Image (cartoon, rainbow, N blue to C red; front, side, top):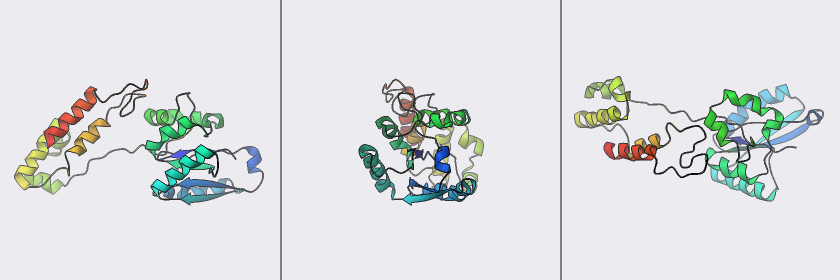
Length: 227
């Protein structure tokens, strides 16, 4: 049975016509809470492919990734499909042992995915070894009553980072409440925002270090300004 990858990014199962001709059990290795995605998908998958039984094996986050690292290194105890958190994806797809999913038609879906997530799942040789299952979108939650008490409008809060920081200071001065738990939160958000195509958080597609880029400078400046 071919070995594929799923990440937290990822959930993919590819099977040959021969495999569908007889009753087969496949194993999906996952971790909480990503295992819930696989478990919800199993009944629909088995209904479409009645000759295949899916077994979901779940380990704690650390145990799971350690087990997958060992399995890829030794070639033993590999599942048919594995879930991988995005921070592990790069090392897993570069070490080999995973199938080229483009050979199974996965490439036809990449245009429907966020570009950076496809780049994360593609190794340096251009092999698509994973399919993203989520992209971790961000959202802003706030208490309307606290903003109202501080005399801060939603527009002031969300206009830009300078306005956000100014709104936070006003909220603290007038109500005693904090807009964020830690100034580092803004720094971490900005560092991970507005990445260019093929660019990671710390390195660009040519493996150049980005920690001296304007994005990092701006992130730390905002973090310092909100302290």
